[in-house]
Image (cartoon, rainbow, N blue to C red):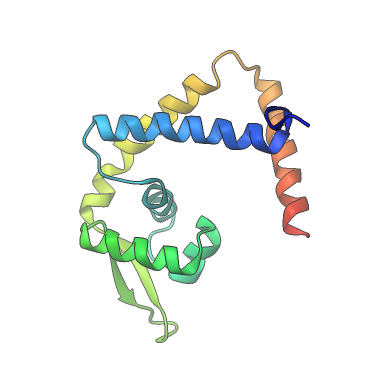
Length: 143
């Protein structure tokens, strides 16, 4: 069995290449955001004020990694934590103005790189690929 012929490895390889293109562009534009931070920002841009537990589920990061990343993002003035009024044992995470101001710039870069990666791929093929990936996720989560 050739590793390059395995569907999961092809996914990993394409993800790694795309991630590299995106973060190379971030670096080129002097944007000091790593992948984990970008994922968190994206979730908070869509739903500011999430709990850490909700972020864990949405970002699929490990708890320790998420905690370290959130701390670093606080130090960079990207987000702030506030006590959760509904549950005093937890807190909610909110974007700071610096992070809010990055939204359009970062999303534009990401969408441009994704568009380049998908160049020449038929829309119907993309729909099929998305259905396949959705089913794979469903299968994996049911194990």
